[in-house]
Image (tube, rainbow, N blue to C red):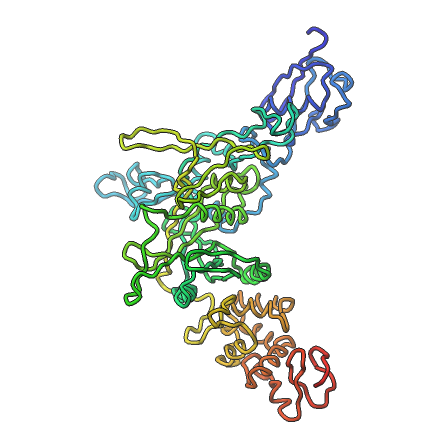
Length: 604
């Protein structure tokens, strides 16, 4: 050595590397040299002098290699730590912190399953006994291409867990199978140059992206529990001709028709505040959003997707609609893809094999539109993980004149946008790579089959002969949620049917958020009992002070007995003679009271 440069050895889980460094280099610049040599993010490791993690080196601009007493041939020990961007070259020890990621229950169930596709003994080809196996009857892997193609109907995409099994196959058994979300942003913290737009280098510059059709999907089927729930959603369009949007609540279940598949089962549709026209939809800020999620989670449900209509009447006498979404036009517009990607980004899929704890999303997009026979039907889609990253990093925008085309933004002084390409095959079979300006959004789509349950399910509204509680945010068509509608609804049920009366998703949202007397702080016992169909607990809750108060409000609007508490006496029965009505909450009080029993309002 020349006395100015020395060799420092760095031992990491991936092996030992040697770094040639000057004695005058500060530790602040030495750490990026280690990160670059090991292929590990700058914030993804720590350096120690000893193997037992003692005598830690700190990245400091005031300490040089010389002043740190590092000598030629010294060994440093690199210990990985949790980082938002762990590289796939890391060993299995590096992803230990991510093993604490809380995955969805359905993922935990499928991770424990064998997943093999069983085959029965072939009488013509198999030459062995009943207890033996050969190449003609041995179980197949869940990602077997021939099986997926020959399945009736053919399975176009691998399930996500089949995709994981494929990655974790082979000799290494998936030791290095880490899933990484695409990144379109400049890596922060680069010290080699001034920040963008003054400078950029290969270390911090995001790689160019080539869009591929995603071969797997996170959800393999969407199932609506019953047609009645779907028809109620469509009623708004039938009455007004305006399009409608809603959020789907339900559960993720095992889909047995696809190896290691996942099915999103829809139990309820919530319609948020919105402005609809025959040609457009606009969502409005929803003050009840947290209440809706609270009700759903308390009942064991999650938000599994969103649904919107795109219907144009064709022949009113026949009840047909126009077939507007097809190969000649588009299946999902660029704007809808961007909105779907935004929703999916807000509902990430927890995954312990991902470098940042999540990978893709199970959130689905459902469209109600006309099919080739001009009948109303439902189509379901997801956008690819690449599309999610493009939207999350603000790289994809729609075009003005073509719904089926998106456009990758160009770099500006405020934002660097990497080059995005897609492959196209011409009529002669020649492949060419094109810049995604513009971009056919079909490269971003993953289609998902959708259907109704063969035998209708009723998670809500089990008594199908009863009139249902009005749906929220439909005052323009006469569906009003107030005490009068609540009284009218409850009057249909006997005291023994209180559980069935409460099993209405829209009713529970109204009870938790009504202006006069919101019950959210008192509904936990009710929701827990409804979740487990505990009739005894529900009946006990109906006799409590909170529900009796609601009954008094109903009586003030209706004047008849309701089903809440089987032994309760209504407000109108107690104070039918010589009573007075509160000017603030309309509660009917006894003539002997000077102030309102409920709100202490003055007597009038």
